[in-house]
Length: 74
Image 1 (tube, rainbow, N blue to C red):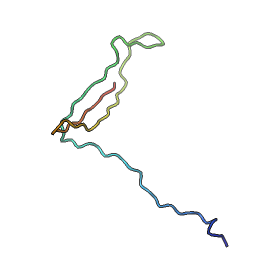
Image 2: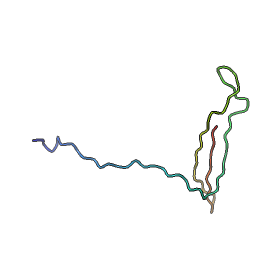
Image 3: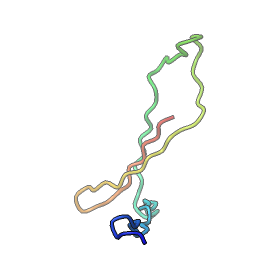
């Protein structure tokens, strides 16, 4: 018979916390962060082309009002 010290300890299953999307009601303030003008490929010196973008949202507080800041990184 297994001693209590050798028995496996059962751990409760915990749910992984997930962030919820920000509500659509607050106004959005969008800032687009463009790369420096004249950016070229380091390998072949041709102009860069946009292949996608990353958008991050952060809830911000201006005294007595709330708005969502959207930062776009092309």
